[in-house]
Length: 336
Image 1 (cartoon, rainbow, N blue to C red):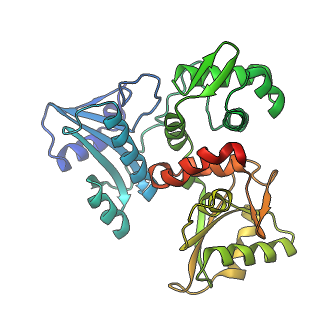
Image 2 (cartoon, rainbow, N blue to C red):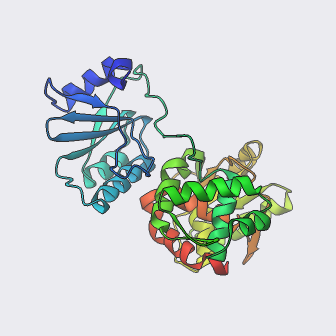
């Protein structure tokens, strides 16, 4: 059964608004020719020589656009002709900012009614393929980044992960061309493919909880003061994303926002303590953890930040928009 069978109304709306022919059909297929790249979009519509890659969102985000821009880059890497490929976001709500960025990146926006059913999960979880962003698998992967070349048994021992799990993780990465093997030793050979997989499997913005304006003009000063106040109040927190990566790499960080994890029951305290009126100061973007991000925090220059492993995972989850600083983190990872 295809998506057009499940959602005939959605397909007909897209047919009308994209000016598709009567011969347009929804295809059930992976997006990329490289069968080891487990990336799907919500709908692939073929209309003659044109293909429309459609993401369906109730409210489109910058991350949605970043993922589609990343997908276009992957097509270019495969040396595919992209002249007949059109990127589409079908959604209920588009902010002016999203409309502006979509126009700049040649992404088509289609407004759909709120009662249209969302397509089912699109990621391929075939037998033998594991989630690289699961806690245990990510431990194995980042340990391999740190060691550069080592055995599966050593990865298992160093991260206290079962040999079976470490072996399954490496086997999956070998099949995808991310890792290469020489006798009993393995190493990461294609970091870009690894980062692309993380961006699709665990988009960081899916953890976004709230955003407030705070009374600071400098991100470093804000993170330092916030760390001091939250520590004194016994609140679990940790800065991540650009804030943590800037401290780990020395890479110039964004000065218009700070990024931090907070437990849900502490968010109201944070907002009541630091919120100022709109258009004042910089932004504090708050994220709800999907795992224990506080277990291995570090303090750098008076700022509490997540571990290098967690920081890299969150950066990779930013997709194309955070790629430069993510690569800087990968390059320096063994020294962190």
